[in-house]
Length: 399
Image (cartoon, rainbow, N blue to C red):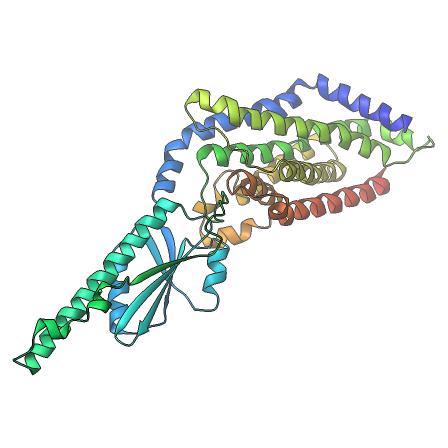
């Protein structure tokens, strides 16, 4: 234990003396957050403003009247209309995959619309959508009534309007609303398709990138000790060869947590001073801590593996730097995943940086908690555990 503490102290002193490493770990991500958040602020606002509201349509009526209503609704291009099946649609709404489920049912000659509202749907959007559906249903009902009157007049010259109008059907409400949650239950959870602002995207994105960039100073110190013969001399001492590896991981784990605090502070307090939005941290401190710890383990596992594999500092800088850039490009750090084509979004799920970013977005953007980030946190922890274990095996073999 004494040897481990001594090793940790030594690593901290070496890191504090490495001005370039400190600039890389702290100043660079802050600069990226400021530049990218401000540069892309208007673009993110346009994307958010242009995002259509998803509506699932279950046409159980299969009638000309229902087809007429759907045709009228499709003219409202602020909504995106998707035909769905009866079985899977309610579950999709409960998981906020769409804002509404519109079910059209035919009862004799009367067409009825039922709206199922998703938990995260804004009440104002709900009111607008209900009015749009009601207008289309009323218009269809009036057109059907006029056609019926015209047909009856053609068949019966003595036809009277008093005898030909069903007032109960005419005055009945053609639209009913149901909720996929308790109406008196407030919810702040955003749907999985919700898009971030420039600050919500940039802060966690460049935080993830910065934590993974610990590979450069971490690898440089380990390779320098190998080249100077320090690691070879350790073999003559009664200590585990895992000691220098663990001794390097602990200080950088602390550094990662300081990075998290710094970047979140920048997002919450500094960005508004430049006219940008303030970062919303969500409501789950436990979820945030879990993501921070697991992301750090993944980043350090990647870093120590590169440090063990590389033979020179130039190799480590190249492997670590290029690897980070590729993982960032694939993982939605440099280009947000929601603007990528579907094929690229499928590839992005293989990047550990994507897991970290999505976990933070679950908390900041979608107000998720520990349960919501468990898939991402678990993947990051497993990635870190495997890479650290592999690095220890290779380190023992090569030292």
